[in-house]
Image (cartoon, rainbow, N blue to C red):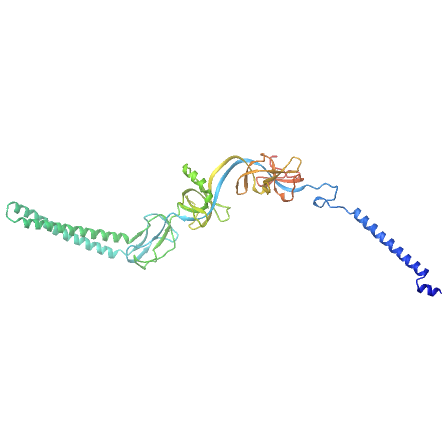
Length: 410
């Protein structure tokens, strides 16, 4: 009977099932209690990952003071060095090059002898022309004597008038022959002068193009030498069309606008000159206009066809508030900065901006001289955030003896 009761789920089987169910319930209750305890004691994250109830540490930032000073406004443009004069020296007569009197790269003066072409053919032509004029002058002199005699005889009615008129015409013919001979002499002298090649301008001579012994012709495509004027020299650069009115306004007043030429990296100033001229039309492809500036170039700091960055001085703003351009932030309501309060918290301060010149921005309103604005680290800030500022003074970090950062003189 007992075995049958067990097989049919009698009292003993039900007792064991109830006990097992009881143990499972207790285990589930214990697991639930443990989970609740874990959640209760786990710290909840706050702003910046800090525990709730703890103060957020100051955020490190770099700050700079609002300065009040004069600001020079420049217009920048890309340009190249262009000589005022570049001359390819050519021969005007044919002949053999006898001497080359310049050195490659030499600086020559206007009128200085560069090359000499064989002058002997032109000397012979000169001698022939001089001999011809001596002969024709003698014939002219004899014709004039005959004319004077004919006039006396005609006055005495000894000869017909036609004979005197014919002699007078013959004198005029000989006078024309003498003038032709004189022109031949002048031509021979000119050819002889052309045999001596001189520098038409002052400047630097390039590499040698001909050597002694070469036969040169006036019709040759290549020249004998190339001379480039280096002092003074000009720079042609372009500026945006929107800046043209400001430049023209200054030119109309007769002011001399300063132009500075910098190297490719805009680190080294190569030369300082002045604006010479502005082009008469805008390039529609680029929306720019070309300007020419002239530089004394006494130290040969500028070289022909050199790439330069030109800066044209337009005007100077006096006693304006200036902050680093990196401090400017932009939001839905416009430009703003993070100003640091005396309690080392920041405030979002809307500002009205003027011109931005390179790494400096002019502030029209919204700040006061001496206030500190955040330059670096603003991306982590909110209005009222606590900060620990490292202050720049003239672009240099200043620290006191205790290792604390401070502004120089503050």
